[in-house]
Image (tube, rainbow over all chains, first blue to last red; front, side, top):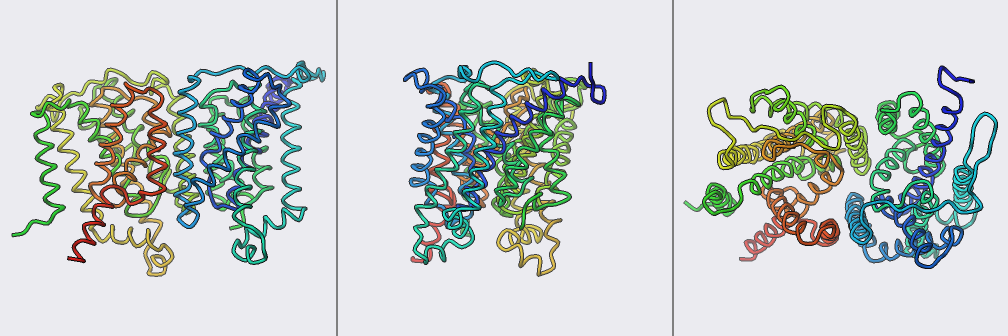
Length: 294
Length: 313
């Protein structure tokens, strides 16, 4: 059997693919966090809860209304995004002029409420979401076996990240968004309705988290606390990448998933902590983050 | 001589504290409350007086609990030494985390402390000495200096009460000292403190280590009171709870954290039997309301009313 540095090749590649899958989730989630932080200066602690809601809505759409995976892929982010918009209008909006720490605390409380409610309704055990018919099975690549669904997750996340990047960096809407990020009051003076933009941006960031949740549903079990510790990992990813950068958050998300996968091969005990160790090193060497500007 | 209002309240609380065993209040409940009070007061030293929001204070609370519990159960170290070792472990952890976290400010500081605390949580989950999901159970309380046995709840209660009073006075002393004044200055305007020639980073690290140590003291005591150390003590939800206690009681006040701890612990004890998982919904709701419209906290609001009444009278 072929080996790399003493580890069998299929094991190494299998973990790396798994790492890439996790990396795609990190990328989607940290992209949403970065977009929200860029315009609202809010570190959205509820991101993990919205990710969980995405998965749950997909599960409930299937079991209550028979809506299949592809329908859920569109509907769940829309529904959860709307919930995010309501939260922004009712709650977050009141704290923009205060220290951003208050909105971190507010979204923490919101996450507790959402996760507590879901646990009360559905218990803390997980629900299995079936892999959609079209994406079952595996690709036999000779040197390894690649489940089709995992390949799809990587492809879908990368496409969404690329489209989001394109939208923000290359379109007129994106230019306005960047202008509002740079100087909100000046942008408003040019006739842009910044408050509406802020609301929609929050909704979009939340929808991205929900999309990640739907994509994750067939891989991990859907449970009320599936996002609780994930959100902290994504925070670390964002600190490593530098929070202001859209591109940085995508790249560091993928990269760290990859590193985590490698760690699972070499030293499995450290796989849960490796990202935090990298964060500590980055803070020592380059406190503003790998792609940060400030 | 006229005694000032805050002093009168302090004396009244102390008398109440001394009478608790006579009033028929369950001592273990009161002890848990006081341990969380110490924890919140330690956290408040950082947030209330130096403006640093640590989102991972459960790490120091929990680590000290584990160390104390392990030393008591497996090594049989005397109680006071086990507590000291627990506090030392928290201080060391605080030193490492603090030195890293102060490299960034504000919101980043909060996120870094949170992430490193999560790292410590995973460490406690994997390490063998913590007993993983089971935790460390059946920890003997031992005795004080080998003379006063702590097995009875009442003697343990007075020990915890004495430590609490000590912590309360120590924090007042720290805040009132020149060091505390510099901390306040840093909290209000860091740039200005730097330009005045204060070594801001050293002050911040020292404050962080002090806060972590006192949080550890609370954790060590809690482990002895309940006879167990568990994963939930290092979990991020505990870090969130201590923030809520401080915020609800009054950030930057001396009595606020204890009051907040009292309310939150009572609510949890009362609600968890009756409404189950709704507890975290209720706690989350209080959190949201507190942040939205009650940012000074109970003691802070009362003090404000009191001041305006005095100035208008």
